[in-house]
Image 1 (spheres, one colour):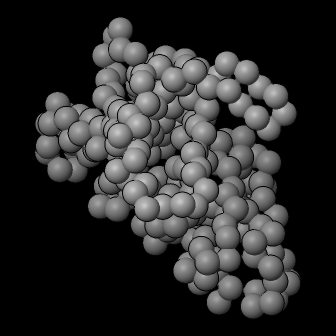
Image 2: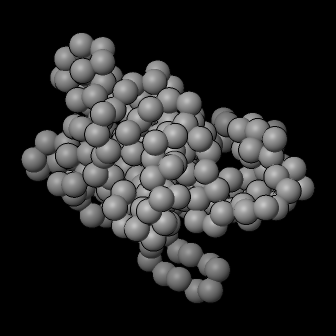
Length: 225
C-alpha cells in the first residue's frame, strides 16, 4: 500500500454515512505533510473491494493474453509476467500473483488484465482467436476494440465501427445523436455476417456486446462523418 491507500472493513452503514475500521494505522504525519497549508475540504475515495479469490477463468484469460504477446514478440512468459506484475504494483501499490494459494482477488486480476489489454491494443499485438473473456473484463475489452478499430472477433485492424444493437437506418449521420447508440468494432467480413445473420443470431454466436461512447469519443472516431 502507498501512504494514502488503506484497507478497511465496513463497520456500519447509516444512510450515506459509513463507519470504517482501518486494517493499518493511519499515517497522520504523512497526511499533515501532504496537506500542509491546505484548508479546504478533505475527501476520500471509497472503493468496495471484491473479496473473492480470482477465478480459474480469469487465470486462463490472463495466460491467453500473455501467450499472444509471446507469439508476437518472442518474450518469454515468465519475463512478461514479471513486467505486468511490476506494472500492477506500480499502479496499485500491491503485489499480485496467479499462483495456487495466492490471495489475489477477482478485482486484482481484473486490473492486471486491463493493464495487459492496454499493452496489446497499444502495440497492435495480433490475436487469431476470440478470447473467452471473464465477465469482469467484457466491457473494457469491447471498448478497447472500438477505440482502436480492432475487430473484436478476429483482431483484424482498421475495423468498421458499427452501430451495433440498433441500426442507424436512413437517419442523417451528421445530425443524429450517436451517444444514444451502442457500438462494436467489426472487420468487413464480420460486419457483413452481422447483417446477413441478424443481430440476435450474431450475438448468440459471437457473444459480442455493444459499448456506449461519449461525445468526445464519438468525435475522436469520426463516427458522425
